[in-house]
Length: 266
Image (cartoon, rainbow, N blue to C red):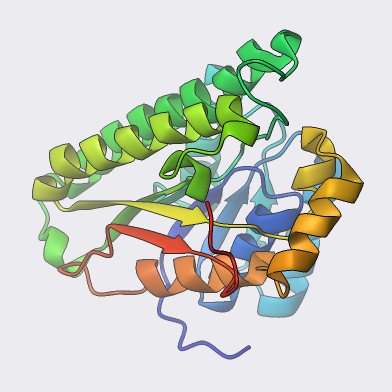
């Protein structure tokens, strides 16, 4: 994949970067010229990805193009460490935040595992809100006293089609994504007038390890993927995000729903 290095000089934070959509986004942003702070719980996977990115796309001012910050993306200490790492490693604050870390949960309000509700809400909703808050504060400071129209700044939030169209089969997970949908649009209205773009991207079915971790039944989910085949792959989401954040600062793609062509619902 060739890019025009439209993100040269920018520093991105990508949460949930060790696999799936997060990893694909990190690789795409690096190909477009960005420096990267990568976050996930699995440190060895992060280190491998950071090395791969630097090997493929070269150093930035003599430093590795990507650096890992392992930890739970919903912990304040991890969020602070990510923001600090950008400044310390690249000598400038991150201006491109990808709030991707999240987890699924099979089942409805009646059938899903209640023991997992709190952790999912903490990861999918509170963690994203905290990252938006801390990075939003930093981006506001960054835009003070400079012509923001020459310097795009972005917060991109990963939602889901089930955060826009109600699915009774994953309604607890969907509820967290409805929450993220509201957060992103409210933040867009608040921060957009100050030059900060907040984008929500809501993919349909994407083939990744997400489904097995969420506890979806492989047979029934496999049937669903077969029904809608070919389904999306993480690179489809990454390419869309890459396009969005590469636009000039005065243009904002606010929210995008992408689905496999044959996915009629949700």
